[in-house]
Image (tube, rainbow, N blue to C red; front, side, top):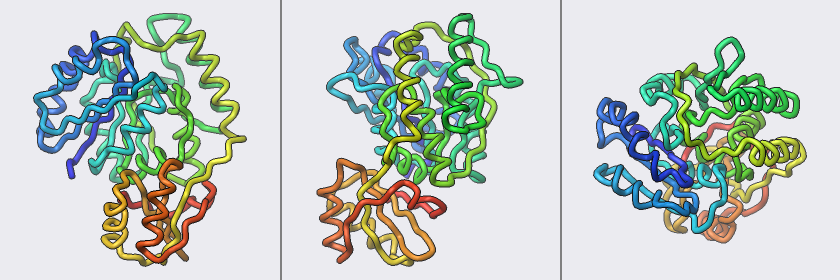
Length: 309
């Protein structure tokens, strides 16, 4: 397993991938190429993003490029990338690497203490962009986010976030939002399941060429935000004894050719949590282990110890 995975969502980012790699390269050199996995998710781009991803990052042994046939949204791209990650620590980063990548080390250090270390650009509670409209829209959205979800974070939309592997996979399994509000949804879900969260101050450059359309995307983000509390979050799970052997579970999951499940150990039982699309494979796992497949609500996952499978 690599020490660190970077998950990079990319929609029509062909012109910006090379500059982003230039920003990231010193961090890769510091960690060592063999210890870093790069997952680029081309979210149905209509430009040459796929070609540029291979040209710019193709020399790296730990590169994995996957693609959606159509544009589904940043949330869908991140969900796929997080489910495929294998590093002990996982960091999401925008393709332009506007957040200075050298902060990766600080996020990984924080992950020794907590489950989730989101970057924050907020200084004295405010984020200031070069565009006044974007600054105003961002402040308004954060105010609404705090109102609807109760989060205290002042920068929910920073694309630079650090996760323990099991936490990354759990949030990928349980989340539903496909658009830009995914960043807020995973913070909301992290609170629902009791993950420990510690924001880390990061520095950044306001790089031009963002794919965010303030008017259109703000409306969609607000719609998704307002629906979070009323969303019924449920996943297929297989119930096992609390002390079940991790290697036995991993062999059963591998035999079913599934990727991304998480073992959630509680005081009285352990649950293998699967994606909503993985019910058929979950049934195979249940039969292999002589266990029962059922559906669990998100609150049943709260306060457990999580292990990536």
